Amino acid sequence: MNIGEKIRNTREDLDLSQSDMAKLIPMNQSNYSKIERNIQEPNMEQLRRICQILKLDPRYLLDLGEFELISVDDMKLLADVKELIQKYKTT
Image 1: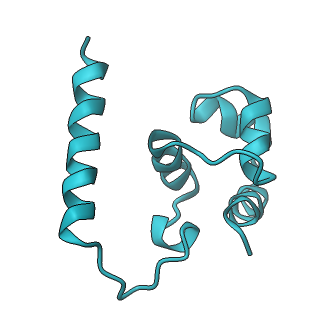
Image 2: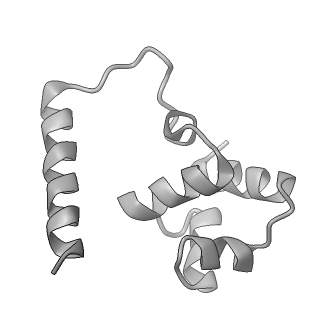
């Protein structure tokens, strides 16, 4: 099962429409639909919001095993991305 199918199945289990999800993320419904159809990948913030709204573990969506480790380089990259997001949120 791909990421879009996992998101769609969980959303449907929670009786949420695509429009509801798009409003909660927030993004337009057309782009949200593309995520569920695997035409478009969610960006980091969209992925974070989808996981929060649907109460999903990102490792499940990304097919990461419970014991897979993130490398030090990956952690540094994630920290850098988080710092950039914070920097541009406040400007």
